Length: 307
Image 1 (cartoon, rainbow, N blue to C red):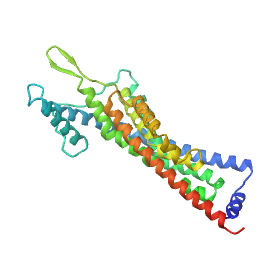
Image 2: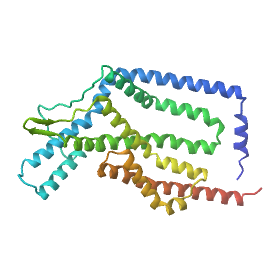
Image 3: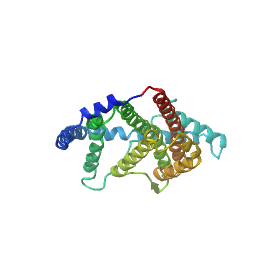
Image 4: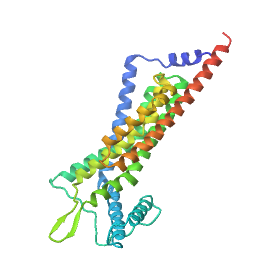
């Protein structure tokens, strides 16, 4: 198997250093313009976007109402009642049953500095700008590096541009629909309400809530990039499927350690992050194995090809 056509293709794409710098400047200008436009759009709708981010808090309050409704039917500890309440909460969390209304209750957040919410909206607009302009940014990166890649490398690079944001969105969705409602439900359940003159209520600051959301979304989204990272390492020859399979025990321990660091201090959140990551680890082994089989076939065909 000859790579002469690909070598000639690379040679044809060679350009002086100045041309590369001009091309880089062009790509950076387009990326900055896309980021700027996306930032102003995101900032214009920052209040609406922040309201959407409050949905897990509202769901948590409704989940708490389910728990209180179940507890109202029993005057003492009943293990079956606890299991029934947990089942109802789980079904409500995954959308299998309708959440009860919480009349008279609103989702309350506060800010204690005059410009706290304003700066929070600026941060939110910055993250929104990156998310909105990501297709443009990814294409600019690909357009800049593609001329220096072989044809087969360009074909291998494109799937990662699709897999990386897709896996990130899956991790973010897990946070938004499962992790955050559970974490906030647990926080709300620690309140002391209806105890006479004593009242302990959760009133999170907008900046703290935004930090919690972004931290969890980034942590889960980046952890879900494990198949992309391991597959790239496998393509580069740094790891093999045999090495990954033999070290799966150490990988599982490492995953649980990372989950314990990036998630709130409760075992359920840690499991909800660790278990998908472990599944993705074994999926990565399968991807690396496929790459190795394909590479072996290419090498075998190259050996039997006439000189």
